[in-house]
Amino acid sequence: MTNTAILIAAIVFWLAAWYANTRLAALRPERGPMVTLVNLAIPVLFGAAILALWEGITRGFGVPTVILPPPSMIWERIISSVPTLWADFQQTYLKGVVSGYLIGCSLGFLVAVLVDRSPFWKAGVMPIGNLVSALPIVGIAPIMVMWFGFDWQSKAAVVVVMTFFPMLVNTVAGLNAAGHMERDLMHTYASTRTQSLIKLRLPAAMPFIFNALKINSTLALIGAIVAEFFGTPIVGMGFRISAEVGRLNVDMVWATIFVAALAGSLSYGAIALVERSVTFWHPSMRSERP
Amino acid sequence: MGVRLFDGGSASMIRTRILPILTVVAAIIAVWYAFAVILNAPFERNAAERAGETIGFAEILPKTMSQQRPVLPAPHQVAVEIWETTAEKNITSKRSLIYHAWVTLSATLLGFMMGTALGILLAVGIVHSRVLDKSMMPWIITSQTIPILALAPMIIVVFNSVGVTGLLPKALISTYLSFFPVAVGMVKGLRSPETMHMDLMHTYSANRAQTFWKLRWPSSVPFLFTSMKIGIAASLVGAIVGELPTGAVAGLGARLLAGSYYGQTVQIWSALIVAAVLAGLLVGLIGWIGGWLNRRMGVREARA
Image (cartoon, rainbow over all chains, first blue to last red; front, side, top):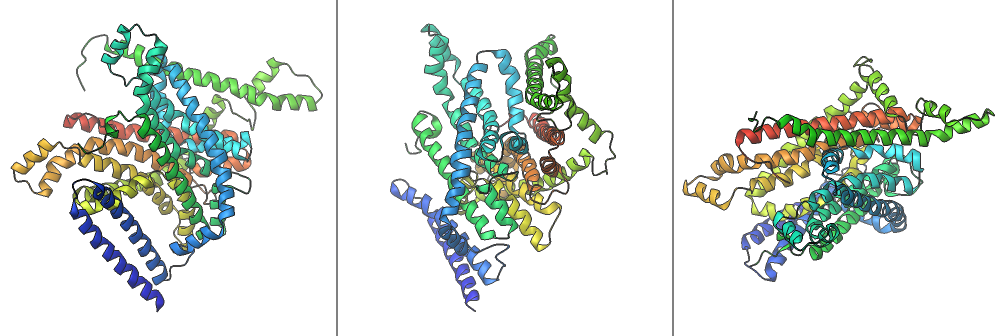
């Protein structure tokens, strides 16, 4: 009986949240803190409604927890297994993802700056880089596991390859983003190649480079997790997912996915924050208000 | 096809476009061979040492390119393996790479079509409803920053436990992965008509449906194809990863996993190359259709 009550309560909450959102969206405040408040309140309310509906449906219809555990159960699992989740996070994210990401992005950047000096190489590298960026690079994971062993080094290697190409392609495109007028101006200043690279073309390339950094932050996490499906010591987010799926502990899987989602959006957000201060001059960064 | 503007067109195109690409490809293959020799040589040296012989570099060189389980197979070994498992095997054979590629491709295409349809529907909803826009857009953008692929094994196993196996669970992962880029791209595309054009439709007293079909939909087509290119690449990755936790029955992902279990490096590399060719063909096909449509409609390609 209580389950039915939970289901009804969830549906009522969903309807109420929907109605509130309709009213909030119709407010259309002109300016000031109200804009931020409304823009924040609507998605939060929507998310809460989804969670409530999820809880209500799984409990109300008695969905087996093997298929879909209710959010409250996942949350309990997160709270009760913080040490395990932290160890996994350390192994996969702090060791594999971060080191691979740093190496891959800096390598891509360096090669792009080198390639940029020669139009011939640029014309050769760009189409191939674009093609490789679209390929299922995750597939090299078994090879890297064979070469670099089960520990985090092989995961970092996968991440290096995955992040290299988006960085290469975006940086090369970005270095060509500075306009002809500005380049001619640098030329009239008799600036050297290095000077115009540092003072004009690199700053102009920053939006592209940050785009690659943001794409790569997601790719890196995916690469490290999938690489762990192919072989890993008994710690790590990918290992946890495949092991607990095998034992049908779906709540633990969701807990790990929650950690991965949190890590993914936080690192994305951090990069976006840095981007905001570095490329403050770019039109997309200007505030909407006049 | 367009008219050639000057006669030297094809010759200069070869010099400025094709030649650099061929050079880079040749460089990659050369580096590959070099690494194959470097990485495979220790095995030959060990073997010679155990046999009590000394072995010179001239003898190592050919041996590194014909090992059964090399650390890094030489390009021609992979090429031979691909030729043997595609052209010389019956397509229905379990050892044929074409069979495995088809298993993966069917899941990719089914998932991609469902994902594209879903993405377009959601984008249409978002563009027309302020509530949907305000409540869902932030979540869609956030969801792009999370490693969705991590869900793949769970989706497979959960569906297995309910008794749904085969194509559908894999296709659902592809759906999930291709749905986000298409939804985001289409929202951009459906909003791309300028205020002038929207006002013009308004002065014609066009209703929402008319504005949609005559203005919003046509102007979103370039965006649709740009995001479909991202979507189909993501779909293929999704289908391959979706094959990993099922215990490796069929498909390119299963070949990768089986190869990694049994140390069959040549098999891994050939599955990888076939996956890469498949991705290139799919993206190229969509790009070609999109380019053709754009030319017919007289619009420029969109940058997502």
